[in-house]
Length: 230
Image (tube, rainbow, N blue to C red; front, top):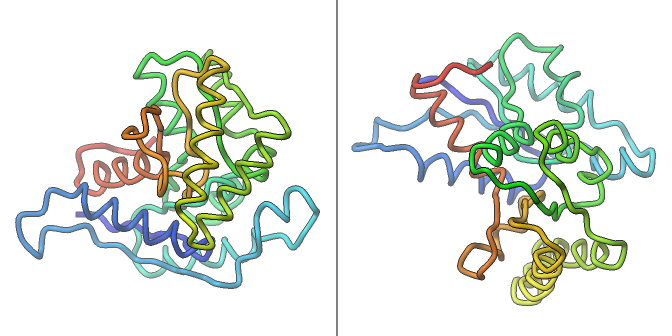
């Protein structure tokens, strides 16, 4: 088994959620058959959305520190659960010699395999501003639907409600936003923020695509040696 390094410090929930998904997806028959994970949950990484939208403190130097520490600790690959953080991925990749799995790109590759053609993106303002998902979807000839200003404001309310622990209110808000996008013609909804899958799932009658689950599945495949990352 190869070792995966997880660059954390960008939301404790996101880091724990990714680790849990990796564990649940690993076909371990005993305590020794599991993926070696090293986590650098660096709490000083500044807010990515603030950096992108409001010209806030640049988080890149801090993320590079985490990436280098993980590489020195023996990681064979790196993963980041935060969607918005992938905006800085090219510069982080240039600072290390091991691959960093591109979660937005992997997500869109999965969508292309499913044959879906109209996808809505529910995400933070920062993730929308990076246009990473939009660009990858457009390259794949997939139509991407973005919430209007009012719906996006509600999406942010829902995300913050999850962060504060009010999952019932969050579910109501985010489900309404997802249904709005489905009514607008989306075949599925990308949960472009780790908090969203905590309250929305296919059990709600919505086809929810969870990038962190796709990332976890790719990590398991790579760590077990069944795939080579390119």
